[in-house]
Image (tube, rainbow, N blue to C red; front, side, top):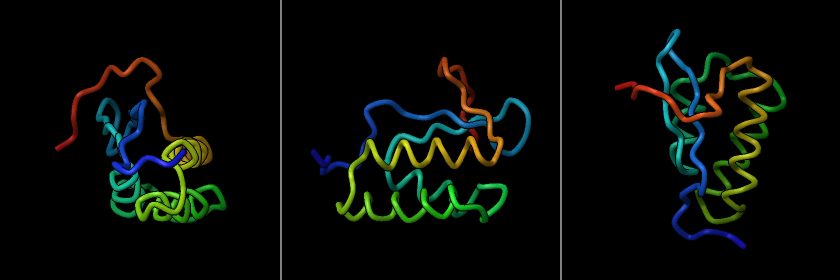
Length: 92
């Protein structure tokens, strides 16, 4: 079932811009922004897949769960730390 609001049931906390600086990604739109503006490299199959799927989810053509899974896979491939416990400080 597709979510109309684009919010993820379980946000993803990724470490970007340096050690101890985290960003909370809680929606399809935030995932697209993160991938386009903050991702360390815009290459790799998982990155391209995540961008395509998150854009589709932001337009209502894919589900939030699929977008979140693709985002996590891209983080794994890019060696981006994902905080499993949700401890973070927001990056402004």
